[in-house]
Amino acid sequence: MISAIVLAAGLASRMGQPKQLLRVAGEALVRRAATTALASPVDEVVVVLGGAAEAVQAELADLPLRTVVNPRYADGLAGSLRVGVEGLAPDSEAVVVLLGDQPLMRRDVIVALIERFRHGDVLLVVPVYAGTRGNPVLFGRALYPELCAQEGDTGARAVIRRHLDRAALVEFADATPQLDVDTWEDYEAVRALVERRDG
Image 1: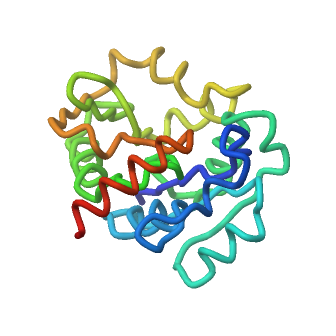
Image 2: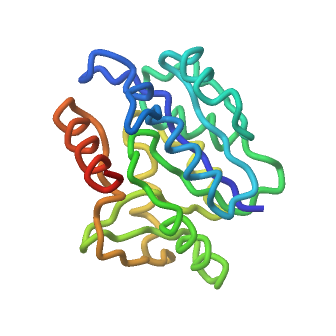
């Protein structure tokens, strides 16, 4: 079983409001991330909520996924990752960890990570966009205890660094899927890209 976690628990302190609920092409960022995960060849999708949990849950209510709440979401990304991993099915053999603020993420990126993992002999699979490592990252089950042991706001970076010798890197020439929304300027830029693409 291949799982996906969407991390959507953040405070969005720089935005002044829950960025998970900001809309691009009429759809909340968190819903775009969740539907991208659902469209990929994963067997379950778990979305981690925290800030504005009820409102974010309402955006996802009709989707075939599970939500879990990190009550200590203000402590940083690591806690949300731990809650997400703990919420996976017992027979999960790998998990793709997506960020809820990357609305241009594509299904084909996730597909490529999963296909590489299924070739075997790796603990994790990392995408590389135009020469730079990014997200989402696929972690094999053997790394779940380490993911759950992380602290603070660094997420899984330390786990990735420790195991780069057992990682597969998958190259993508287009860095657009890696764009995230941390500021209003980011949000406006992403909206403009989507309008140009879909217009």
